[in-house]
Image 1 (cartoon, rainbow, N blue to C red):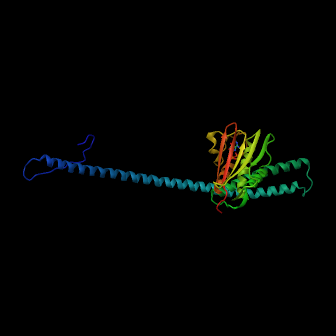
Image 2 (cartoon, rainbow, N blue to C red):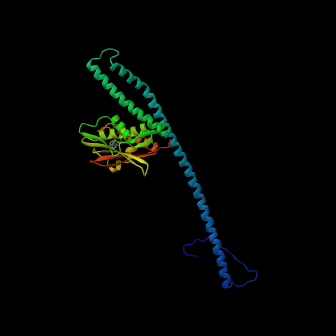
Image 3 (cartoon, rainbow, N blue to C red):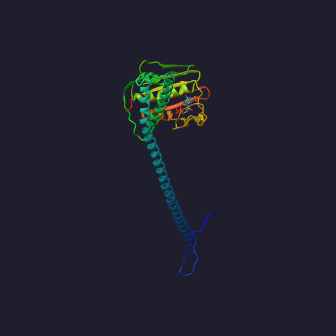
Length: 303
Ligand code: ADP
């Protein structure tokens, strides 16, 4: 018996006439017993593996069910957000329309305080509409319903259009577009690319008090990509926060007393749009020194 081995059974041999086993016979029988013991052990181990396997299968089934339930819940939440945004947009469009009519003076002359009040309503309602549109677009992308319209465009022109939509930088911040080539042709959904850059620029303006914001564009023929970089000299983002900011509704400062407004939707939507256009969006940042957001898109998206 080997050390540490367990006894699984006994093997008995009988002679019809009494005599002793020869050493040769003993060796042979020991060999047979060893083989039988090994087989018995293997059979036992096999039984154990079989029962552990079926326990694992049951656990897997349970987990699969839970994942299914979670996915169903996630889908219901997204459907709810999508329907809700849609329903909110209709009355809001009506508010904006009537605000415009009032402001235009068609329904009579407005006093100065009335004009100021109308201006504030328009500003707040427009911000709300932008937020609802973002939410609606994000839910469309998440539900796989977003439409990509690919057409010939120019990466430099996209940068200019985004800068125009983002408005003016803060008063102590200088903004410029940098590109070595006057034009960088590409096939993409220009509206979506422009929207991503507009969000990146708005964030750069929001989180930069002094210094500069630079939007650079570069095409790389060998890899067939265009890279836009939005570099700012703002507050920066700590390394441990740099992944989370791309999650839906996530902000570095999520407290109710936070300094900067926002919903934490912009980067989540931008990343999903970039992936939809077969590209990617990433960030490099040093806290206190500034951030650079990098949008990379292929020069030719498959239609
Ligand atoms: P929002 O700006 O509406 O909160 P975003 O998804 O655009 O949502 O951004 C998420 C968070 O990422 C911001 O709240 C901020 O904490 C951080 N962030 C984004 N851009 C910058 C930037 N240029 N500089 C510093 N922090 C940034």
